[in-house]
Image (cartoon, rainbow, N blue to C red):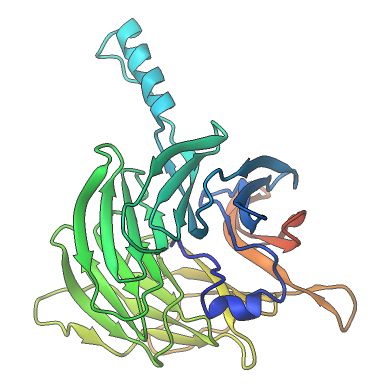
Length: 365
């Protein structure tokens, strides 16, 4: 899920009341170490990273180009500097020597003119530039789990799979959807989800074919998508009051290719929209889902609810300045925690401003 806030999207309208950054996201590690923001400068955008543990700014990078950032996501990959060290170690110790490869965190940025920049946290600089990979504004860009392929989506509906090693496109497709905004790829790199106006396409990456189309309950454009850990569930949000869970298992060729029935439809709040969602799972049936509302309330659902039932929220997090005044949570993520030597989940939140966001771990379960 590479989706973040966009100043041109309908989701940003309500969000701009409580945020002063263009984009934001915690990194996608099991234990989120960084919080990234992109802010708008006088003549160029600016990327900042903050350490979750310290709460301090760790990286500050002025983007040299005057192109505007249009999307942001996190990922991990083996950088060129790492590869050179690995090759040098092999030459010294012998070709048969096994070298442990540690992937580094990177921030992937898409621009309004179709370029992609990859920023290395380790090297504190842009390590790769892909100028003009498409001839129109990028609306989403994601790096697969292995860090070998980029997937990006333009506002014209063009989808491209890009090999990081070969530094070239390996597949190009065209969605049938209107007003596309979101991409998601599952962990084994076999399924790609594309969200548009009231519909979601599920693509078989290997075959380059649409295997299923999900018809949502309304025609608002899908703003965010996320696969469960095992890939059997896809979660979607159009930024409005509800989120929907879809079964991605397509089974036999006799299955219907168009589905209008999500396994679950959850009403987040009667008078609030969804700014951000996150999802984790320990088994295909056991899901933990998090949302951040436009008003800055965090809600967590943790259940093994049967299809067709509506799971009840298990946790609601509000930061209050007083009994009446709520301090909005800007962003939140499910992360791993160790409580009394037991591994569980925690919620890490960001609040405040882009100049100095406050980062806190507020709940363990």
